[in-house]
Length: 403
Image 1: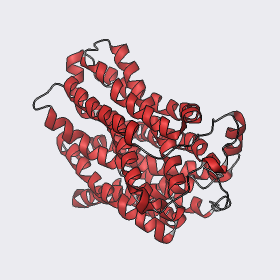
Image 2 (image 1 turned 90 degrees about the vertical axis):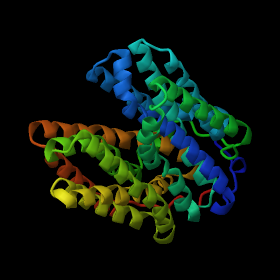
Image 3 (image 1 turned 45 degrees about the horizontal axis):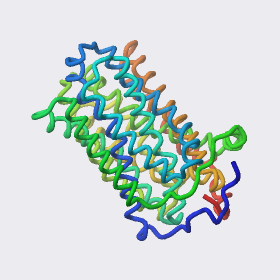
Image 4 (image 1 turned 180 degrees about the vertical axis):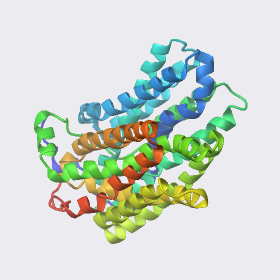
């Protein structure tokens, strides 16, 4: 594939002129993200209906993860042929369509296949979204724009159980997914005919491009920094209910309620972090966020009683402050034309470490010792982040044109 010419790239504009585009892309991110996490609160009903056990239910979440990890490597192939706008549109359509067969599917292997496609469809979004936002909006406003986009995950963590609890009063789990499918399809239709932005191709992650990215020390530093943040976010989120029930004697309902409410602080902080990032810069914001998040995560394994509740609310707030600056920095460790490639390679590796290996280690330590040991070690791991930030070099490609 030939290189992307400067003439093919959009002219970056102030955030004010692109707020509509940013909100629409963030909405598509939210729809895809919630299509993955909504199965957790629905799982008791799904188990009963399909006649599956807890182990088989766990395999369904594994299939979503496998699909998500494979998706970014497909996104370069898609965006290089139908542009980033086409990739965003395709992701939205697949998210809506793949939920429809749940109305009648009974076979467990078919359910697993559908779950993998959900992960694949949702994962197609991120590389093209990052490339579009950072190309369409001037660098001075990336913090504000990326804060809106990164508000989708905490909002999904808050609303997924609430949506499920509300709709399950009147509908089966199958109809809940069908309703969400209808909303996703309407949004896909809206973006197909009314969406703007991303009308330029991505780069195929071929061996030459991958070699270039993988040879950048700054890339590997960002992978580790994002892994720390994702580990403190998704990794701790996954294990915290077990920690609260087993180590602190809470009921499962109380633990889940506390966990859900605590995500509200993270949702609010994402917007504040975007403004802070644009004021003081990406590296200082990342360092401060990881230092505070590491300390808060470490304290989760130490404190008890009221202080534990306080820290549970503080930890997601300081942690989510990392992401607007983190994804902005990731887009600057390679030339602008490589943004889609770097967002194809970086987040999946970080997700594997932070949201895969870290909670596995915490679970193992919880089985052999107690969960507090694993969570304390996770806090120590995150506290290494500010040191890594010192070695991160940004800005050498800021004067280059491209997208």
